[in-house]
Length: 314
Image (cartoon, rainbow, N blue to C red; front, side, top):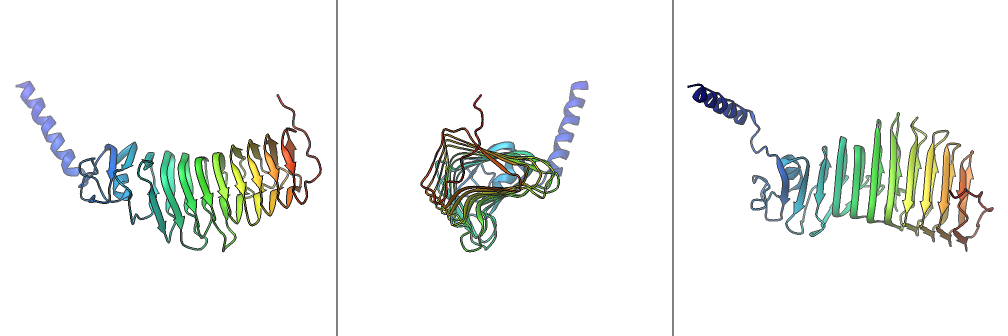
């Protein structure tokens, strides 16, 4: 008798839960997207959906979205929770009049692989990051954006952005925007790491505007290149706020200017890198410092600058 009563209560609760659930709601560990998919489908391997928006609705927090084929005519993507979108086997091209990817995932970890992104609108970034515990862009091509290729603009908290094995090219040419722009405000902080990234032919390579935040920020560039910028390869201003930039095993060449920094809080260290064939190689103003590990190749610039102070190897 007792067993039948428990079973009846459980069945009643299950029915109530199902009735209260939104139609089509899913918690897939992996959701699938295909050109032949339908957004009425549950986004399973056998019944894929048609868009990343629908796939994000169906995938569980921390789940993965994969592509069954090379997708066409995809809309912009907005990610608001921890998720991985991996289309490495079938790369996806998204070029629309808005930001092609927006990451606004407080405390979320977001990973994107196998995409070509480009915003067609003037001054609109291809990738906009406003909130995330960590955002990873791997095997991504970001090109020909009307605005910055990547714009990181948190207003609170810490955003960690990791970019690897990617190309950022020809962004911001018409409207003087950089390949990557970091501009935190309030008490927000950004930690940006580039590894094996090619930044080619952008108006500026990397731009850091950290005067609007009270928090410290950092930029690490390793095994990467910044080449052919119409203006500065790296342009940074932090005012009195802490901004630490580390450049290691990288190439900065054929830019109109190399590393241009300002602000007493800005400190740059350069090691095992090639800074050559630029206009001005280095320029530091308003108390900013640039130090060398004395194992770089700094030559063939129009102005190599005065020898950099040596940073002690430990």
